[in-house]
Amino acid sequence: MEPVFDINLLLTRKLRALRDAVPGADFLMQRAVEELEERLSAVTRRFEKAATLFCLTDSVANVLRRCGKVAETLQVEADRRFLTGGKGVIAAPETVPLPPAGIDLAVSLLSLQEMNDVPGMLVQICRALRPDGLFLGMLLGSDTLSELRESLLAAESELYGGVSPRVAPFVDVRDAGGLLQRAGFALPVADADAVTVRYDSLFHLMRDLRAMGATNALTARTRRPVSRRFFLRAAEIYADRFSDADGRIRATLDFTWLSGWAPASSQPKPLRPGSAKVSLASVLPGANDSGGQST
Image (tube, rainbow, N blue to C red; front, side, top):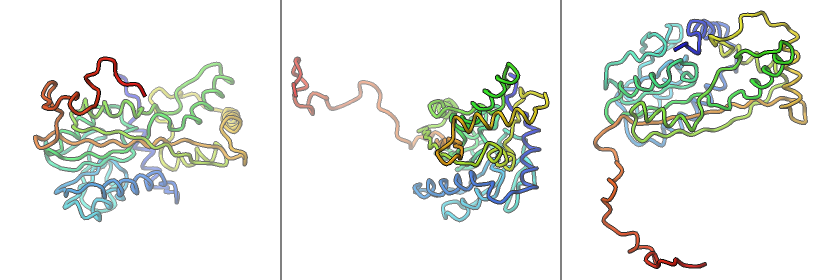
């Protein structure tokens, strides 16, 4: 199957963003880290060994180290330059270089949406977890940058009579739970939280995307040089369709959270059909009345 993303180009752009770090450009990761801290606070158990997977920062590992619930934390990254502290392992993108049942907590923030084989990555994560181990992940969901996608496609169609992929496809939250289940996780949960960020113009939004290393790395992207006229027209369309009364434009970011547990015999399981010991008719008044009750 043809890969969706150019992995080498993605890594090059992430490293450039790290090298030319712009203050405040990591606001998405900081928001994700804060929510991770909140979600971990609701977990009552302790974890002997945790791994953060391709998070491109040590801030995720630092949350695990200071939460008081993790004895040891290992960072897994695609390049040593992302390891700014603590123990680390360098691995090829989209691989989990850990032995089966080697950890009991895995965390991945803002990386799954840029992987070619998300189901395969989830299978690897589930395999690396000990029984009753926990996976927590966050990726950008299907409504992310929908305004930018529409504006770029409209401008390209108008000026060139055709369109090319310019914004990555994102997973719908309704499919995310199914991906966890097919990967072998028990008790899978997926939930989404849409956040609106405002900018002065499309150019300010694109400046932030470049600072995050999140510009177009699709394998099917056009190699044709793009004129300034194209971006000016896209900015006009964006402002016309997605601006507020003060002239600033809106950009949607769809935070989709995933959680699942490696299967274990101690986990609750649904009862077999027909195994109930109490009749519904015995607890609901009028349940035996064929005509029902009027209200």
